Image (cartoon, rainbow, N blue to C red; front, side, top):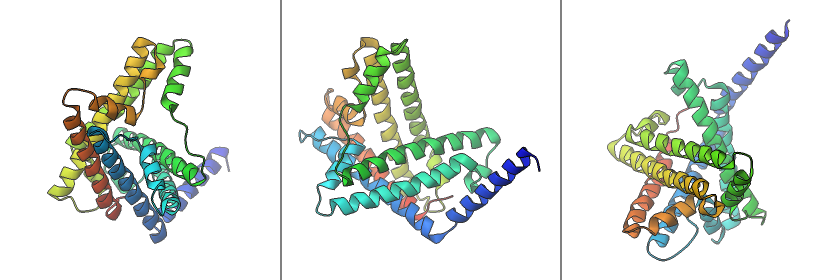
Amino acid sequence: MSNAGVAGQAAEGARDASQQMRGSRGYQVLVAVGLVCYGVVHLLIAWIALRVAWGGGGDASQEGALRALAKTGAGPLLLGVVAVGMLALVLWQAAEAAFGYGRVAQEHDERRRLRKRLSSAGRAVVYLLIGVSAARLVAGAGSSGGQEDTLTGRLLQAPFGRALVVLVAAAILAVGVSQVVRGVRQKFTEDLEGDRTRAVRVLGTAGYVAKGVALAVVAGLFGWAALSADPDRAGGLDAALHTVASQPQGSSLLTVLAAGFAAFGLFCFVWARNARS
């Protein structure tokens, strides 16, 4: 048998194994746990964002939400559950990105299937980062602050550094716009088996739009850093939400964004019960 034939058989075997794994009850439970954890993280971000909006302070980022979770009585246990749940989500989305043969993907043409596979790859990265952060907090290592600043500083020092940071800003903005479009066009319903009620659509729309707006502000901060050649102007979600809070009527604007993040968190609970694969 040719090398191409052997590779084809290996790929087919991997697809079959992945499909069997994803069809198992245990795996589906893990995915549901992961989505619930993802929802909890967004509810914590919403709570911290509200505190920031009205002068309470806090780190309104995914890392900040995990640190808030760590401070509870069952912190290590809850963080362990988050880490395991995120790993299940990574496996779920990695399988979609690698094989792209889920029922949702089969309903579209090759171009849309490719976009869905790329989207799954992006989700897998996000889930992996959250899971690693949770695992590090359980281990007591935590994450150092200013990671975005450090990355931006390194990029600015590289040849064509400003152009690279602009590209990063453009990529983040593209993701933000895609989130808004996904929310407005209610494309998130494709991920659900059922429960496409008006309330669920409102939660999903509000959640995705809020996340998209926050990412657009993050992109603006990276763009500002590129224009000023100052890496300190860059920042992640926490910096973006604090930037919103510092604007005229910022407290009200940030309260609206916090409500959106809370809506996304609640949507994740529905998603967990009706995840479509």
